[in-house]
Amino acid sequence: MKRAGCLFLVTLPVVVTAVVYFLGPVHPDGREPLGSTVSAAPKSRQEAKAVAEGSADDAAIADAPPGLAAPEKKELAGKIVASAVNSTVDWRSTYGSIKDIGDGQGYTAGIVGFCTGTHDLLSLVERYTEGHPDNGLARYLPALRDVDGSDSHEGLDPGFTAAWQAEAEVEAFRKAQEEERDRVYFDPSVRLAKLDGLGTLGQFIYYDAMVFHGPDTTANGFYDLRERALAEADTPAEGGTEEHYLDVFLDMHRKAIEAKRLDNDTSRVDKALRKFLEDGNYDLDTPLQWQMYGRAYQL
Image (cartoon, rainbow, N blue to C red; front, side):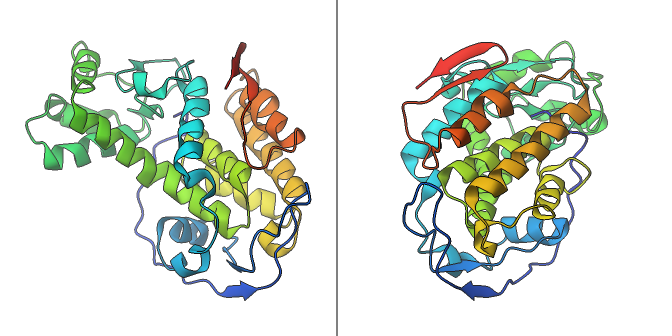
């Protein structure tokens, strides 16, 4: 999606976090506590990324409700994200989507907007090629490595967009896009949100922010936003309220969008995520109504 720059992959140590036992905070709408055991997710960016992408805390969240990972909620998340990335709620129609939207990150493609300039598209094609070496995108790998971190199309034009669209008809490549979405964006954001004591809406807010800003620890990346939010509000796992923490996190999400360019449209925060929060829809239940970049949607 629209990330601030190339995602640098760093090998990090797995951080084992302490398990804290308490009667979980009550949701703002008066529902049952979030849980009696949660893991205290770390505040530093690097440690939080290691925890989000690791498995050391599996036992701590094993009994947590599925939240956004429940099949029907994950499907809903895919539709809302697709409204932002591809102006549709039919996310399964977007495997072959590819365009340069002029944001300085090259081509944006596929179901979550993998970008040629932000490493995730390169990573997707590399991993796909390991299992399918004769695929139609493999010949572009040298060029993808060269343009990574830039908005350049050098070595990609004129054939790359057609090759992407053709490969998107292959079931294995569609599965590869979904697996990369889950590995890089969905699973880490939902996992960390659960460790922070957040319910389904909070998990989706983390996911949306990670897709838009990138799963990196640099300025205005997802982990930077979370660190800044933690400096101003306690998570439910720390005894804070879900409402206040998410309100603060959305402020950081919005500021980071504006930091890319002052005239950037912030409707994904103002008229979608914040609307769900103001409605008290912590379970992200339908019916849902929101606006995204001037278009109205409902499910």
